[in-house]
Image (tube, rainbow, N blue to C red; front, side, top):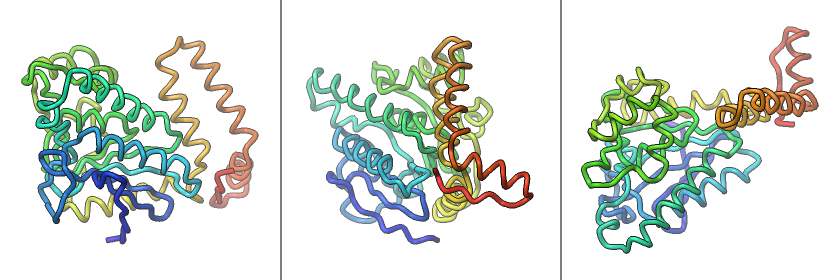
Length: 284
């Protein structure tokens, strides 16, 4: 497996590494949402405000790194991507703190979603509650076969999925199924999630092989293999366009295309096609 030299973010709840144009952001915590003190293959990677702050820092770090073309978001261990927000934390803080906790999570996940670099979520285990909310802010979701389920069971706590869950799930799988899933608290198998377009792919393999396969697959989105400006503009059109009237989406698409036509990579891509050679993109 490729060596990832992780560095811990300030609260030691998120690990960060880069390799060959890919930034890997790993959630890592115990059931209380505290930093891991030893290796734990079953770490639930529950999140607190501290983890969300670390995630925010990691997203910004990847965003500003010109050498990073693709971001991989995953969880520590082999059992959980993330079990969601720490219930112990929620039980000990004020309603005002909970509100601001949700607000900051909204801002963090929007930052992830709005980052021009492709974000791939490697779901290495269960992604439930806030864990699924984080995963839904990624562009592409790939799950490890037979490693877990997905769902938003907040109804069982008397609350809703309040860090983007109701909004994103509805947009991803449609109102009727999303509402049913959330009011029943149903957990969905990866296969059912794939059938409802919540998960893009399901891959076999143990945790180490899965992570290596993710890195290998994401290599196609790095330089010189892909025109990274084009990837970013495709993402912008797909993220923003559906929220505005169709004719405005077409206008946005034209402006994004015009910017690409003026790029060096578009000239290289078109020339390479005509000359029957592999394009060598530079991100310019």
